[in-house]
Length: 235
Image (cartoon, rainbow, N blue to C red; front, side, top):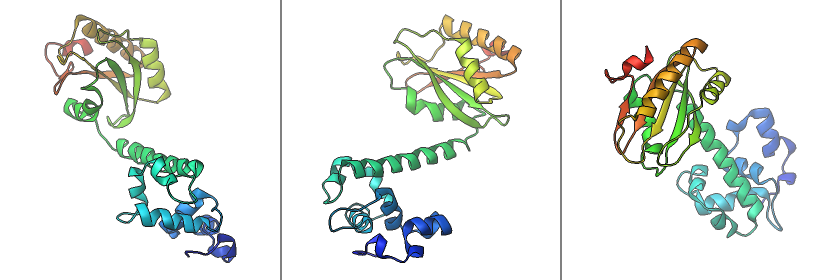
C-alpha cells in the first residue's frame, strides 16, 4: 500500500470503510495509524506517513514501540508536525489507560499484602502524605482508586463526607483507606486511629464497610484491621 493515496483505493479497501464494515482487527498497524493521522502531507499519503513512522520507530513490535518515542522524535520525520505527533501520542495514551483499567478491574484486594503491592509503589517514596480510597465490589475486587487528598508531611484532614460520597458514586460495597507516612514509619498515629474508628462507624450506618486502613512507610506497611491491637476499631 506504500505510495498509494487512500482516495485512489477502491472504496471498500480504504481503512475507514474497512474499519467500519469489517472491524478494527481487519486493519494492519499501518492502516490504523493512517486513520489516526487523518491525512498526509505534500507528496505523501497518510498511509505513506504511517509506513515511514513504523519503519523508523516500530521495527520490533510495531505500534507498541511508539510508546517510547517522544513528540520531538516524531516531528523529526518529514510530514509529521506537532498536531499529528500529539494525535499519535494521545491515541497511545488512551490505549495505555484502557489497558490499565481492564487489568486493575481483575485485581482482588482481599488481603493487606495485595493492597500494599498495588499501592506501595505509588506512595512509599513520596515526601508528602496522600490519602487514597480504594473502592471494592462485593467480591473485594478492585473498582478504582481515588486520591482523596494531599497533605503536608505532618498530616491531613480526613472528610467523611468526601469519602462516602465518592464511595456511593462508585457503587462500592466496601472501601479501604490507604495513606503514607513520609517519615517512613508506618505505625499509626493517634489521629490515624481516631479517623479509622470514626469512618468505620459511619460506614456501618451507610452500609459501605471500611474493611481496612493501611499505612505505608518506606518498604513496609501496617494493616490496622490485621493488627490485633487495632482490629477492634472496625467492630
